[in-house]
Image 1 (tube, rainbow, N blue to C red):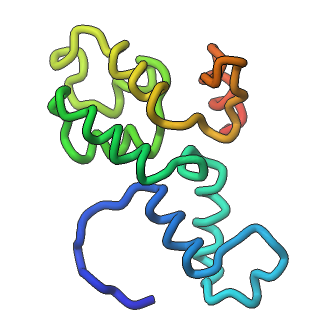
Image 2: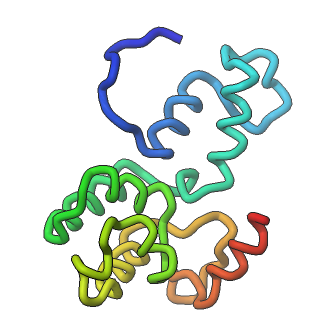
Length: 143
C-alpha cells in the first residue's frame, strides 16, 4: 500500500470499503489472486456487514450537506454516517452534550433514516424504510 497523502483526514467506512474493493477485495473464492493483505480482508469482511456496504458517495454527500444546520463536529457526522443510528439511544453517545445541544433529536434521526440506506441486517418495510424496532435485533445479532 502506498500512502498518497499522509493525514488527509478521517475516512468513512464506505470510503475504506470502496478502497478495498478497488484493490480487488471481494467475497468470492479467488481471494488468493487479489492484491489484498489478509488483514485487509478481515476489515473488508467486517465492513460488508455494516451500513457501508449499501451507502454511496451521493448518500454521504447529501447527508453531510443536510447536517450542516445542526452544527455537528466532523467527527460526529462521520460517526453518524458509519453507525447509522436510528433511535435516540444510538444518537446520544455519538453527539457530545446531545441533551444540551438538541432539544429533540427526532429530526436528525429522521434525516438519517431518510438519506442513509439501512444496514444489511435491517429488513425493509413496503415503503422502503426499515421496520420499527430493528435496533434491538441489530444489538442481539452483534453480541
